[in-house]
Length: 199
Image 1 (tube, rainbow, N blue to C red):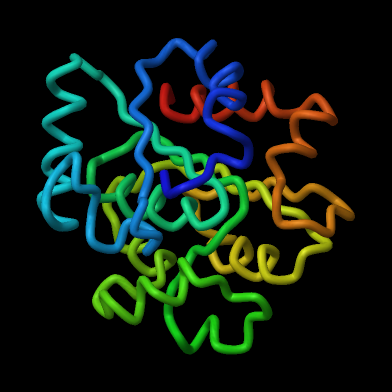
Image 2 (image 1 turned 45 degrees about the horizontal axis):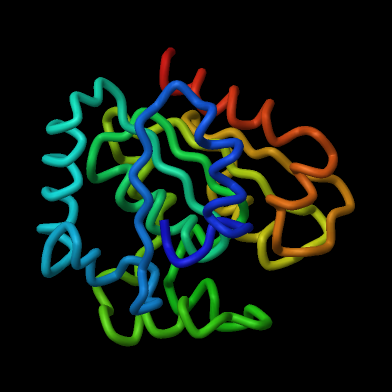
């Protein structure tokens, strides 16, 4: 979800396309982290959730997974919870859009600033929502320990029974997809992700 996958979609699809799943790619060309939905699914967020549910039903999906990288982590968590996903894979990125949590964040990007400004009700913290959910998606959250912003966002979800944090020790950059691929751990992460939804 969002407007980036950590690599060009055609490249990352070399790995995602090998999974035993049907894939729906969503891009937020308005760059507000899915805050007003996706026009191909509906005119607003609520109808986009229903549109995504209908689309997954139409293709005969038995389980739903969501994947988000960078700014796409938040909509992956948000939409994943609202469509009843079995598992969510976040490759770094925000877990809360609340001003209180993020106001002192360095380089808090345009995408994540515009969403809360234009859609204030979307500026929520996913931790209490996942904590309160009866059967939340299982979350695999990958982040670099040397990148303070991502570490704080990851630790915001830490300790929840449905969340597994995957720290990449010493990584001091936001993009965790490329290092995961070059180090050889990316296929294993995808396998863990799929297995989470099968439990």
